[in-house]
Amino acid sequence: MATQKLYAGTKLRETRTRLRLTQKDFAKKLGVSLPYLNQMENNNRPVSTGVVLALAQEFGFDVTELATGDAERLVTDMREALADPVFADATPPLADLRLTASNAPTFARSFLELHRSYRQTHERLASLDEALGREDSSVRPSPWEEVRDFFHYCDNYIDAVDRAAEHFAAPDGRLRDAQTVAVEALESIGVEGQFADSDLLRQYDPGDKRLTLSAHAAPATKRFQMLHQIALLTRNDLLEATLDLARFQTDEARAIAKIGLANYFAGAALLPYRLFQSAAQSTRHDLEQLAEMFGASIEQVAHRLSTLQRPGAKGIPFFFVRVDQAGTITKRHSATRLQFARFGGACPLWNVHRAFETPGRFLRQLAETPDGARYLCLARDVSKTGGSYRAPVRRYAIGLGCEVQHADQMVYADDMQLSRTQAFEPIGISCRICERSNCHQRSVPPLERRLTINPDARGLLPYDID
Image (cartoon, rainbow, N blue to C red):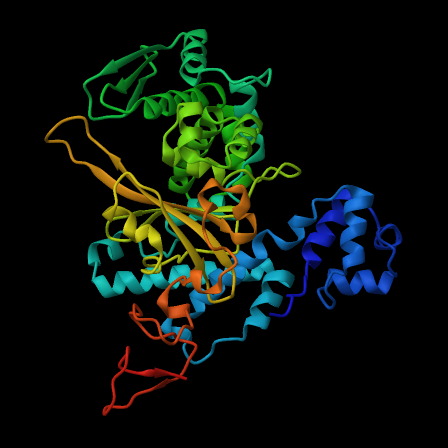
């Protein structure tokens, strides 16, 4: 397979601007001519190996950032949007999408916003929801989707909040019991904590300064909820400043995002960055050991691993996903090339869907996506009881994985045939943008390919994909 050329003009311009260098001075430090730098910054030429080395040696630049960021996500999101039937006859080539993502990212995001608005309008009309139509005839993005995309394009890493949580939980660099830290923090601001037989996980009464937690919640959940409330009470200015920078379009989106940021603080305080990253490396990312060490749940540990993207101290790029029993994605993030479907469910060939069949066990899978990327995928079910016989049990499955070149740092890769091509199962993102022609689980044909239908023959599918 040919090596993909690296076009990173936007990153180069951002780096030069941050360093306050002119193109002439920047070109001199990189050891290239001014016209050559100009061509690289405009993505007319790929970034050369010499420039990559110069960035690392001259500026201590984390060169992995050149190949990460928004561009690949924007390409994936645009491909999925363009798989909509409305674009069936006008799908641009992949090369054009990459140029758009690199050279005009603002335009690409505007296109995605426009398509999202179109889908919402179409769904309203299809459902004949006249009451909603009378109440609000304007078209606005879903607040939930807006917040989801905010974290998605931040690499699910919020530096200021992460560092504040780390300083709160481990100011001297030593691990302390999270519950002890939380209780002391609440007492220091005069908040009384109590447990009650309640359907609410957490309830705070600002008048009495009383925090009530459900007695039925798991210990890790109780600690997390205490830390969440501490974020709201003691780090409100930081959360509000972060929200101001995000510029959400609606009050609802801002309110949802504030909950998300408080959750982020809680997770980062429960699992402080440097201590958790060191433990993850020493245990070879054994989720059960990490959960025991930090008093966290398996889901909390898996989610935290996907956020270890601090510049200069990045962990393994992981993807993380949570799905319900219907296959609907309820949480998703990817620091890898693998991106999840924005609409609909995930590929049915992915092992995360089989986790419900084997409760309490980790499932391992070697998988290959249509672009040739190979992954080590983990999946496990997570059940959340309601604390009584009649209370409903919430059942999910979580998936965590990394590209196979990082697999040797994972205990779960032991005894797997990483060098054997046949060991990798073919998976995709969604059927509409997957080009595999012989998939036995395909539900709809790929929109970028022509079909041939022969009424006198039938194979795996009732059509052939040209």
